[in-house]
Image (cartoon, rainbow, N blue to C red; front, side):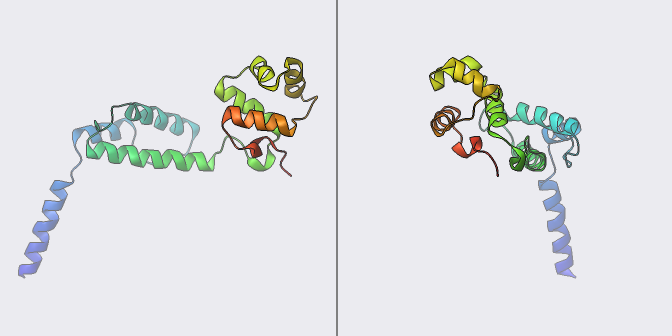
Length: 153
């Protein structure tokens, strides 16, 4: 009988100790932690994630940090399920265009990298393939694996 009373008290204390604070509850009100099922859910999660991620290091209370960690896991899971491109169906030209778009690189920039603006135009219009030398230069510039610019079999 005595052990039961002790257990009940410990459970009651544990619940009080781990009660979420107002900052955590405000985050839950803005965006409840749940699986991301649509692009809209994903965008809303990224908005909340961005606001928390830009706060100074150590400024989040433990409950906010738990929320941030959990939301990050949900976003990463969505990213894995909905990759921007399927690696089995990619081609070097689309990968180059994607890398250029993401980094803000222009056709003229690619021409300067490869040493010939006309060559960049031919490659980007699909009239010329990337050589091994081109792939090495582009991979170094975009800081990616050269395999990104190889044709998938």
